Length: 373
Image (tube, rainbow, N blue to C red):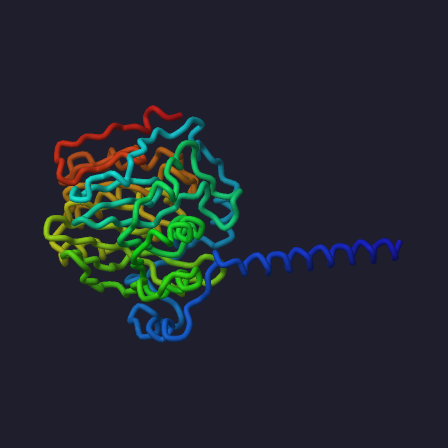
């Protein structure tokens, strides 16, 4: 009996050892990236937003709502009743040929979730592209909804500027970014995020890392402002070693704001006042939960933030492709539609791939989610 127990114990120890070794080897994959070091880390440490070895938000930002433990939040997330997290039928899309768009026209094309293709001032810009069928370190997790992946790397034209808001898996996608490398001329990101691109073989001369409230004066009268968001960063165990951000893209004709991920905060009014409003605000609007109200906005807060940004139009995203929170998949679209009634901005709800023509003030979009089960 004792011999049998010893053998079972030995087999268990060996199994755990193999598992841990396997995990240890797996996390060495380049997709996990490396932490900033050397000159990059020196620059990070000089940032006023980097305190005690981590980036900090402008205001106090708990990971979870006050009074909730990490264990209780995870228990709720894993075992609470889930209703309609994903549609049972395909999401409708329009596959616009991005390569043949007139470069002189200012256009925004939602590619699903937080991914956007943009033409602005004659430049082609790509934001947080995730063209994979999943947004996670493993392919069986966080699968895209049916029909939401019509675009491939081959469909992308040459990109003048790739903008990355932060390093989470649903915003910085290793397969997409590395496959796009030959097409990308320049990368713009927050401090520290350039470490991923260096690890992945990008020429660091063309990777511009910036702190919050930095204005990058680029070619053809294009200015990209790197701006604060209320969020966090990290792809594995280390948190907040790289900076999360939003962006404002400004030309003589247009002013566009992209929120990145983040909770509601006073930075929206500050940005709206500082840059004198926007023609379009592209805002996160999804993956919210009462247990993490400080790091993702509720749709009603998105509407308020758009007003404080002094936006003429609102394009909501961060929904419609992946289920990261426990709300029904179409809840963000329904709630932002209700919250946008009688507001000073126009709500834009294009299908994935449907171009938003920034000069066309009369352009209308359907409530496409109402026909999806």
